[in-house]
Length: 222
Picture 1 (tube, helix red, strand yellow):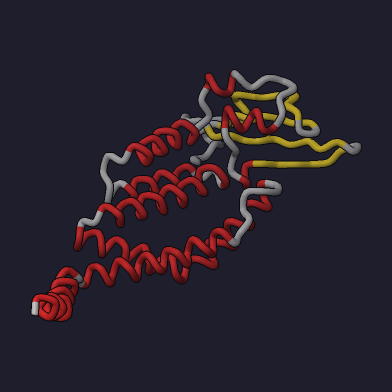
Picture 2 (cartoon, rainbow, N blue to C red; picture 1 turned 45 degrees about the vertical axis):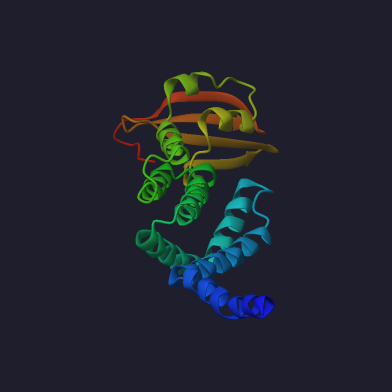
């Protein structure tokens, strides 16, 4: 009799309790995580961190175009879900996506203005997030050439050493010519006063720099 009663309890009460804890949010979250897994799988299938800078930019653009039909509605659904439920898991994914997108603008394209916009939008769901705040501060520092960083660039430095100090310039602020078998480049960095500074390379090594490469009325924002 006791065994029968226990069996009846398991068949009736436990399923009822199990279904009681299920909510529409659970199903919505499961759908979101499944979509996010597909997004991550697409990312993992792409190789975007090797080759020249132009190759990496091309790969990143190709990946973003492939992701957009899924990523854009996913981010909208994720935001709606968070605003409805306050689920911190949704905020964590939101911040991660904003960091990835902003880092692409900052580190690959040197579009620090766009990066700052993206990082700030991440703060909408997670105000005070330290990773986002740190990225915003670094983007502001790199948005315009800083005198101290520019002064640390010396003749003979490799391109990678200049990138460590000044970051990359925007692609449309780079020029290259080949003369007598040598490759000459100039990288232009905007200054906060509207003028521009420049670093000059010969076969990948710094041979000259100019803090006042363009007048204040000829510079541009970054």
